[in-house]
Length: 161
Image (cartoon, rainbow, N blue to C red; front, side, top):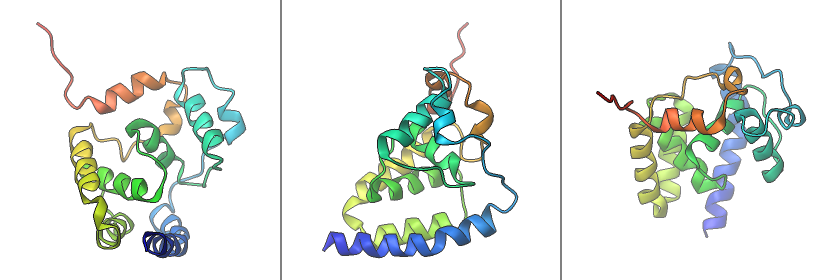
């Protein structure tokens, strides 16, 4: 039964993804790098980690949606369907708000309610992180991945006196 529910959500996603890119990402441009070029970045860089992510999962970059894949790296969210919905909850907790995200959150809650605890935890994790949903990560691809990840995971910078 779960397989049928996930197939329905995949169908909805497939039909709305292009609309989302057209209407919500119309001012955004696609990145100037491809998956192969990302693998040429320095070993510990965000760009290299992203290239390895694409290679490991057999994914290709979706124009104007590259930041979403960086979100997976930063947060440790998986790529199966319930993890994708959890990612939307995390982004909601992080301050992102648009119709596509809300539709994913509502449909995911209704169609896959058995993951409610995971969704709630993801939302809380997003609230506890520095806001990153609005960052264009293309300019940070050269940066050390762990430093970038630590910066966003740690909401408050400790002050030592």
